[in-house]
Length: 487
Image 1 (cartoon, rainbow, N blue to C red):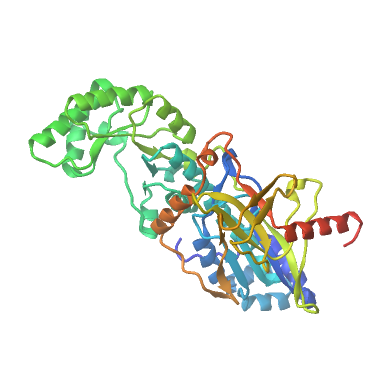
Image 2: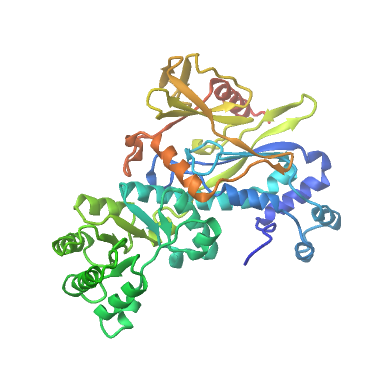
């Protein structure tokens, strides 16, 4: 499965459109496409963007092999001149993107592609596939991590993920969003992230009795001794046998550096509280109580409210699949076409009766506005690329739909940060992806810029994503032109 050529990881219509552009060579103009999403997963107020490193690798390695060309020929859809062109195809344009781990919001471009239309069109499907998946899982994991309130969350979802890639890159995304470890050994190797695991019920069942199983495991892994205590009877058998093993280890002088129990069934709140009493009474006050069993952010929140004595969470199916919201919904839309006569980009807009599907036109950037005193995020401002702002000047922010909703920021009270960074320039990669654990640290800082009200799992305060006045006026002019029947 290594070193796969993902060039044909695309929808057929990307290639048929490319052939159409190829036959009309004057149509291969330079364009701008924006990749963005329309609503936050899970009813939250934000998302976490992820997957850029894999998107970069994809673009760097685009090439049509002889086998690819032969396959496309066999479909009967493509002419030989076009297939000959594909043999030398590579990406020659520019790509700008928001770095992985950044907090993002609907409608703002996560990726901007500036390239000849054949190239810009071709990369659409794969970019969306990669960015959508990892951003979805990172967002779900961020919600789970927030619900855990500082406890360690481990990603345990490989066996329930929708295939190897979903398991591997879902684990990567979960780590970016704040998980402390993954059970996925291949992900650990590929991304240099911590791996953790205990043992299964089958381990206990394979021995003559539970105590023997625990003793054997403790003898093999004395410095990572987390015992699964619910194979037979958690409180009458599992916890007492675990305590007996911990006592024997202590009597032998074996350091109890990382030890405890795992609960995987039953009433986790009740069992954890009773287990805590038993462990404390035996002198094992620092023993870890971890839990698994179909956890998600809502169940973890509920268990916290019930006073559950759990401080380590193994989250699998619901996180690796983002079970309550299985798709990210990212789209890829044309926003401008370069006009050689005027040497400028001509803005383009998609109009729809559904207001949510009307796009923002032009060559855009995103400027994030922070409160200078607190460092908290105030709003995001989508602007035209040539706009200039000075933090010393007053700044007007207004809702692009309900324009009467306005905020005036006094000069010197805010700071501005441009979100997108160059990734490819003239076909050459100019971006070096950080390591996953570095992205994880950056993501934690990003979450720290959100107000607590925006982190609520239910009915969170929404972050404002506004349009600059020049961009808003451009959009209104294009909408008016289209309503008047112009092209």
